[in-house]
Image 1 (cartoon, rainbow, N blue to C red):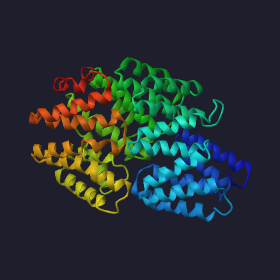
Image 2 (spheres, rainbow, N blue to C red):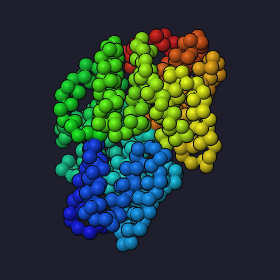
Image 3 (cartoon, helix red, strand yellow):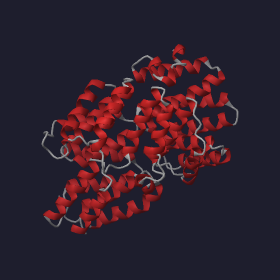
Image 4 (cartoon, rainbow, N blue to C red):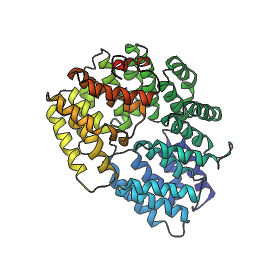
Length: 439
């Protein structure tokens, strides 16, 4: 690594550790790195990456400035560092397929490059590519001993990739091994929570939280998603009031420091909107909570940086009764999809926009059109990213429209897809018990 001093290198390592461990002070660690070396090429690369990781179009200009800084200070840096600059360049340009290929190439040439590995894992998740995530994690595992920097992160990523590929025993084993190395490993805990969700092991899931929550101090917004899983466990047990209390206290507490820092962060919006929809399906009333979420969704009209967020925003707008705002939101989405045919445009065109158009059609009383759009696009939904547990709400929305319309064929289609993903009888999941008979 090319930098001015050992102190700068140590600061960079501390920053990278913060990123791998999902620490909320990672941006402060970045400032300390640049204070140690104001011409540190890789620090500017990571600064640009952090801007892009927020999946927010408003950050694009800042990311471009970071790229320019990295390029300005790239004279004499290694081929590996040059490759990271090129990956950031294609990321900012919107060519995510090229970006993924460049990160993969970096890890082939330099197998212990934990940054390229972790960024590939992140983007693979949000592009719906679990098999690629697992391939990368299995390959990386051959190059990291347990005492190596980043070894725990590789294990945690292996755990999550195995879970998304349906290998629950391997996922749980890798997750617990990562937690043995660091009880505060949030991504490892997250992977195990997913295993428990998919296997309907709710009591074990809640005990996991009881045992580990004391180790999560200083974590970033991924903690909100962990608490979303806890609310899911309670909802599945019929404890809807407890789930709503977690919503208000833990992952959509508008007065918490994490929420105040980024009140419209994509993953937080997904957590809140999907949980509120689920709880209303179980009989609770979301009330004024929808208005708060709809306001933030409307303000992000036209920002398609994270396709999986788009259906959530649409749900919030419609639940708040803002049909015209929802139409405007869809129009902006379709205009984006008609632009240069890069990775995100293709995903929005084939998956997010049809789903959102279906939601609007249903809100306008045209359920047959809604079902037609969902039926035609359902195979593309995984391309929006998100886990099986997160994507489940899309299938639940489809099922709700199909049930109201008494469309037996659509119910059979949904039930078959969900059963294949879950690997357990649908009767094990509260949202799917009424649908079980249709498969």
